[in-house]
Amino acid sequence: MDKILRSAKRARRELADQAAEWLIRLEAATPEEKRAFVKWLKGSKDAPDEILLAKSTDIMLRQLLREQPIDLDSYTSSENNVVDLDGSQDPISQDGPGSEAAYFESPRRGARSALASSAKWILATSVGLAAAITLVIFGPVFLRDAVNPNLYSTSVGEQRSIELVDGSAVAINAKSRLRVSYSKATRDIYLDAGQALFTVAKDAARPFRVHVGSSVVQAVGTKFDVRRSADRVSVAVVEGTVQVTSEVAHLSSEAAQVALQEAIRVTAGESVNVLATGITPPAPVDVMDVGVWQQRRLVFRDNTLAEITDEFARFNRTPHLRVEGEALRARRLSGVFDADAPEALLTYLAADQTISFKRSGDEIVIALRPLTVRSDQVPQ
Image (cartoon, rainbow, N blue to C red):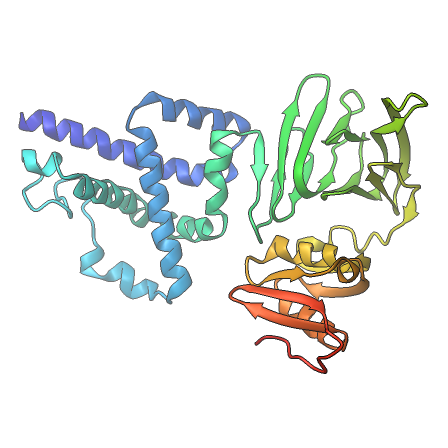
């Protein structure tokens, strides 16, 4: 019985080690490796538990690194942190490594044991701590990609860059989501939300197309930015040429909607907007402004205040900025801001004596000042 229990426990520890290894490999995994990970997940009923426990270790380390400095020398040299890699000692169970109680623990102690097993691997290997620090930055994305290796998404304030199998590169802005669908004949990207900057590897035999709703941006070898918002799709070209195609709804004499195809060629230094009514004519754009969001800078050129606050919301959970009144929402402004400092926008707006501010919890309401009120202050 003891031999069986030790064998089962050893197998679980090996699975935990594999989970911790996958946690690191997935940071730079190829599509083939991601498919192998999914196969590994399906290969054992305990594999999903171990990968989640390994991820929990990452979250614990992330909180430590975020909330307090760590003396790495004293931490790694402390006798309390020396672990036995041959499995002869169990730091969690007090009943002995081979006893029945040591294996059949309560759910909480079992989770702690498996978590400690994952932590052993991270702390024991030479790259473990560096991997943990890497996970602090990139950890939130690995499970999303592993579950669907062709789906890439970012949360508020999160940016990332990916390299596709053909050598093309995609920089993804915060609060964005895109899907990749490659075949022998085509390279299709579906931008479901947000913004991305594409640097396309040349392949004349396989057109590179970005689908945004009913619009398609097609290129062979070029660099361009696509942004999807509630009422438009904006395309700006840095290098090369793209063709923007959109289905446009028109009303016929019988008031029936007919879908028509409209195509516009856009070259380097130009931009267009795809609206419900059609595609705007190409207009000049400063290529230095295109993709500047990668440096977490926001450049506004005659944008509405509603658009500006929406862009700050892409990078900041708090404070939430809400603009009251259509007149103020439609007011146009220009400026360059730090994406992580919405307070700078408030300071900028405070110079306008017609604007007032009101804080309610994490929300700041921006409104036109009532005529009866003479002054107000930006909430501190």
